[in-house]
Image 1 (cartoon, rainbow, N blue to C red):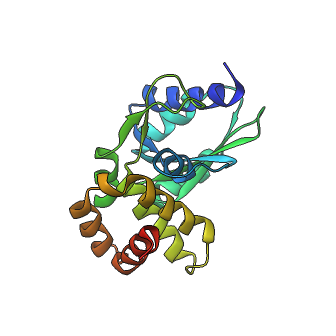
Image 2: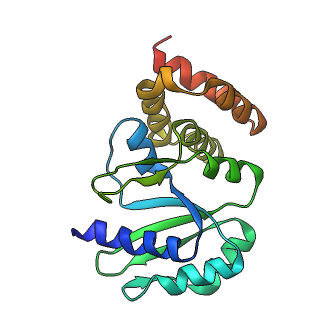
Length: 191
């Protein structure tokens, strides 16, 4: 088992032991649904309760670094925290979700095979949800991150005809992203 697979296996196993719903997001998800790119971490979204967070952390085992207090505070504030595989110096950014959209996003996750991570299918956020997430990061970062914007365009180009347009339109409207979604859709199609 290669190093990255081994590091991911430990995190996946901890999620399963703690019975926590999770999905891969971020650049790994946009690469799955769009254009490939390199990244030095894996973004994950997860719905923790306090007991399940503690069980998750306890189940990671040796070789992973985390700060329990930071993770607990992050869960309460719906902020991310990090788990680091020490041998590889590989980081897992775990975004805690506790709102309506986060629950829907986890309900819509899709199991796909991501060969560099696992030979078994893993949960990945949907194409629509990675567009929404990347648009949020783009907006919240002052609309200057060309990488986030390129990721959105890549997903639109690859998944264009397969996107659930009513879902995408509903949530981009609810989250104040409709104007960015329209702009990205137009740019991706060359209009």
